[in-house]
Length: 398
Figure 1 (cartoon, rainbow, N blue to C red):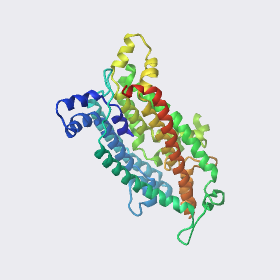
Figure 2 (figure 1 turned 30 degrees about the vertical axis):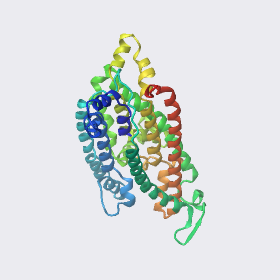
Figure 3 (figure 1 turned 60 degrees about the vertical axis):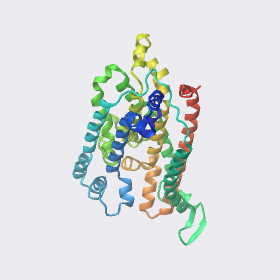
Figure 4 (figure 1 turned 90 degrees about the vertical axis):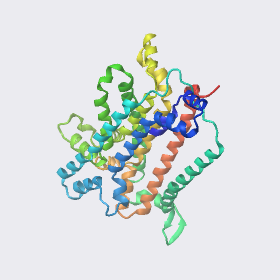
């Protein structure tokens, strides 16, 4: 998502000039494209590295005897009730956040605005053989991913694998198993929708304040470090922190404990970093001349943000909302400690049913999560198409 945001806005004049000077496609890639998306590439690499080193769900389900830090923290807290050692492991997992901040801060110094007030829209010329090769590569990768998803869907629809191969919907009767029933699925939809809405507003507002408001630029390094920290905090540690903080009777926010609100807050905090980097990458591509011209015309900065910055960054904003929705639908570690029987979630229900031996029912609930996520992607794609028809006309060549 970060790389797509970095590649989406480009000044076509750079490629036209390179082509006029006789630079081939390879030379254009190394001299124009790669330097322009350097910040996005480094941000994406940092996100992938940190998310993998702090991942809990994959290691717990299919990791076997291969131990990782996030899983060790879970074992210490849940298996041995050793909260102190679990906290120490959580602190060790914060080290990647510090390294990520150092690399990201270095990359920001080298990043230049890619979209200026005099920029021209980049229109990519069709190259049939290259397009077909790229399509083939995408089909192979997509086919491998769909094969894995198809296996889980087949397990949910087959009556009893591998003895009774008839198709059946009996595994979708969640009221017969210990997993929270259909209410768990509806709770996940509500939580994901609230997280996508409020999370997108919060993330984009924070990124805009730090990048485009002059009075906030002095606080940019500190605010950026705080925005990077959630990426390195395992969901388990984050969930435990919410338990200890909100569950204290003397805390004025104690009323939030056990409600849908605390799940939304935890989800926004858990996935804040990736969304923040996406918003920052989009905002960094806008030239500061937009704000300078608006200030010279005595246009309020919020008017510039509403009529210029937000429409240009609309694709990134929609990607942030989509990311929040899908990530929240599938999260387990961040909410496994703070849900209640009234706020049971579909992802936690999958874990509980699998632990109870109801593998087919857990596969059925996982299938619903996949279907709802795919439907959300389709809805966001349609909304994005219609909104971009109105706010992104400047991208189309007349």
